[in-house]
Structure formats: C-alpha cells, structure tokens
Amino acid sequence: MAARMIESTDLLIVGCGPAGGVAAREAASRGMRVVVLEKDAVVGSKRVCAAGLRPGFCGEFDLPESLIHCTTPRLALFDPFGEEHAVRFGPGHTSTREELDGTIAARAVAAGAEIRTNALFRDLTVDGEEKLVEYADATRGDRRRIRARHVFLAAGSTAKLERLPHFAFSDWNAGLMTTLQQRWYLARPAVPIAYETLELHYYPARDGRLVVAWMFPKRDHLAIGLGITGKVPGADLRAELDAFADRTIRRLAPGIDARVKLEGHLLYGGMPRPNVGAEGVSIGGTAAGLVDATNGEGIYEAATSGRMLADIAWRYRGDASRASAAYASALHDRFYARLARRVKLIDFLGRRPERFRLLFRQFAAVPRFAELIANERFDRTWADRIFLYVQAARFGARSLLA
Ligand SMILES: Cc1cc2nc3c(=O)[nH]c(=O)nc-3n(C[C@H](O)[C@H](O)[C@H](O)COP(=O)(O)OP(=O)(O)OC[C@H]3O[C@@H](n4cnc5c(N)ncnc54)[C@H](O)[C@@H]3O)c2cc1C
Image 1 (tube, rainbow, N blue to C red):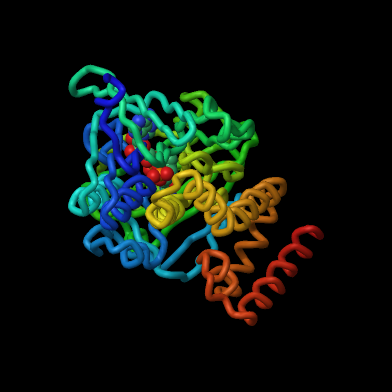
Image 2: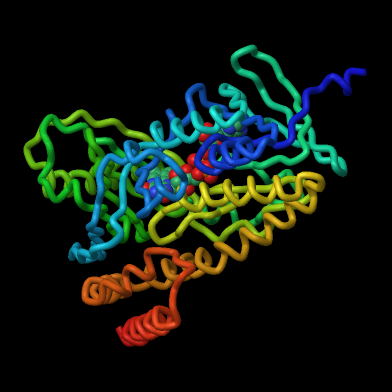
C-alpha cells in the first residue's frame, strides 16, 4: 500500500545548473512530467563560475540577450613568460550564473517543470525499470522518495556517482581541479579594454603545477580566478590568487578602490566519464566530465547535454533503458573526441612552457586557426579541415623541436 503512494514522474533531474535546467525546460515543453531536485535555496545563487559564454549561446538556447554583461571580441592569451597574445574571435560574452541558471530555471517552470529547491539528492536505487530516488527536503526537514521512469543526474563536479556500478570512474578524482575566484566590485570602471577582453593565463604555480587563470569582465565587477589540478592547501591557493589578482588589477584598474568577494569550488578537467547512460539513468554536464580542459568551458557542453537528454528521453519515452543507451552513444559522438584531445593538448603544453608561447603566437599570426580551434563547428568544410590539420602539424613540428 505504502509503495503505491510514492509519487512518480516521467523525468527526475538532479541539479538545476545549465544541464539540468535545459533538460527540464525542453522535456517539459514536450509534455513530459518533470521534477528537478536542487539543493540550493535559490537556483544559481551559489554557483562559482567565470560565466564566459561562447558566441551565439543565448540564441542557441533561446535565452534573452539581456543576460549578457559584456561582449568580448578579444581573447587575450598570456603565456608562462607573461607575454600577451591577442586573438579576435566570436565574439564571446559574459554573464553571471545567478542570472543564467535563474533564467533557465524560470523558463523550465514556465514550460511546466517542477523545481524543488532545498532538495538534496541522497540515493538512487535501480531495480529493473524501477528507479527510486531519495532526497532530503531541507524545508520540511524530512526525507522523501520519488519514483521516475528516467533519471538525469546533473549535479556538477561534486556529483557522487561512485556507488552506482555503471558509472563509477576510477580516474575521476585525478581530473578534479581546485579553483578560487575573486569578484572585484570596482568604485569606478577599469580601463576600457578590460570590458572587451576574456583573459586566460597559463603559468607554473609555486609548486610547479600548471595554473590556468582568468579575468572575465562583468557589468559591475571583474571576475579574477584560477584553477590548479588536484588538491591545493587553502593558504597556498589564496596566496597564488592574491599574487595573480594583484598583477591583474595593477594592469587594468590601478588605484581604484574595490570591494572583493572570494569564492571557491571544484572544477573537473579530465577525460569524460566513460559511461553516462544505462538502465534509464543518464549523466549530464560536468558530472559526465564534459569540460574543456584547456579553458574550463563547460556551460555550453552542459546545456547541450541537457538538450540531447530531453530530446532522446522524449523520443524513447516508452523505454527508458533504450533512451539512456541512445543518449550515452549520442553524447559520446558529440563531445568525446574533442574533449579528449583537449586533455591531451593541455598535458602536452604543460610539459614545456615554450609550447604555450609557440601556440599562442601561431594563433595571433593566423586568426583563422584560433577561430577553428575555439569554435566547435559541425559545418567545417574540407578546406577548413585541411587548413586545421596543416596548422596543427606545423605547431606539432615546431613544438617538438623547441
Ligand atoms: C571557477 C569556475 C569558473 C568557470 N568558468 C567557466 C566559464 O567561464 N565558462 C564556462 O563555460 N564554464 C565555466 N566553468 C565550468 C562550468 O561552471 C560548469 O561546466 C557548468 O556549470 C556545468 O553545468 P552543470 O549543469 O553540469 O553543473 P553545475 O552548474 O555545477 O550545476 C549542478 C547543480 O546541481 C546542484 N547539486 C549538486 N549536488 C546536488 C545534490 N546532491 N542534490 C541536489 N542538487 C545538487 C548544484 O547546487 C547545482 O545547482 C567554470 C567552473 C568553475 C568552478
């Protein structure tokens, strides 16, 4: 009797970041019953992120352009010797996750999805076609259960999937990066070029590990942060960030008073999770390891995985096992080759600092090469491909000689 009283839904989503939010919106708009569990009280309010968006993101995901804080046609790549290499692209955009995730969630609700906040996912049991999800409802102070046809796990880098036999991935922890970011709320604007530029910096930390650091401009602040693979003691990470922020502010906003907010989170920068779909359970976004290891980009990948999930879950709505298998295969085809190449590239570059300089000089001298690498395009012509391979071979040969 009690078992019959457990509520049920077509699609249960864990996490309301871009992966979960887009999946919720698009599945609900097709008429599926969707419930999202989000542990935070307000969607997006605690997301630590530089929130750089690739060109065309808002249009592609039907989001208002008002989300965009700055339009940044300039990408400034700083090599380990401090030399700046400017590339024109896109242009890219910046936003904040409060606005981005909040807007996607509002649209998901408007489409008919139910988003439960203060809802902490605890457990998933799969028994054949039966998926039972348990979560802690922090508002009511109790534990609740919900039955779902299809479960989409999209809880980001802290997703704990090791207990789920299909999805355990022994290399996951090795791919985690510790990140720390300062938001600089300046009393007056910084130099104008700061608001047209996404800055990425690559240099060795005091302990020799590679630092990937950034300055992304926003309407009301500069986001200045960095990430290092593996665990880093808090004091060391803060010292590393203070030194980087100091250099950056002296260049872009010298002598300007500011209020500084510090925030930190884990980011994933390793290989994608080998299996992301089985028995009506699918994994998306960063929980699936969909992050570009060279620059930390994962919002686009997350949102795209959510869209793919919604489409496939709806297409195979009568057979969730088939849906999760089809999703895993489609995600693999779409992302894995590129993301695996990015992991190998950053590893190759990180072994010799001169390699960053060679690559960035080549990007600055041959902007089409940078553009083709930066933008994942499926409409590349044969001429584009040949051009790309020639440039890549040129870089490979020069860097091996360096
Ligand atoms: C410092 C930093 C800077 C970054 N900068 C950029 C950038 O500029 N551009 C870019 O494209 N990407 C960037 N990224 C990467 C980007 O943030 C992620 O790739 C992206 O957020 C992944 O989206 P997601 O939906 O998979 O997961 P997330 O955005 O992490 O969302 C997961 C959601 O799940 C919720 N959740 C977690 N655990 C539970 C639970 N147990 N129960 C219920 N809910 C749960 C969380 O509260 C969260 O809302 C950055 C990441 C970091 C850490």
